[in-house]
Image 1 (cartoon, rainbow, N blue to C red):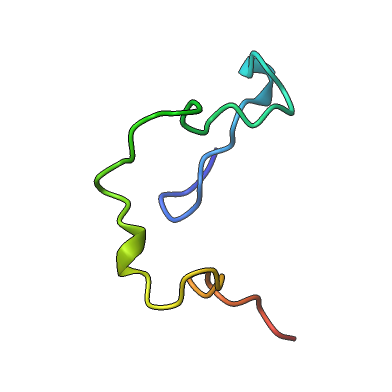
Image 2: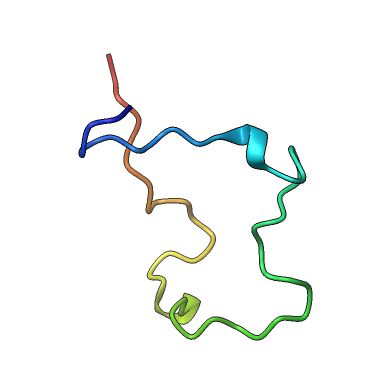
Length: 55
């Protein structure tokens, strides 16, 4: 099991389509109003992720 600070383990055996990225919105779906890309100060630059540990 996991502690509250860790992500729970994911049971991949329950995935009906393993290896298929089917979590994306369907083609032609409406834009999600909570994801406003016009507010991105650096569009196209992947600078939002936590930096890798150096060491």
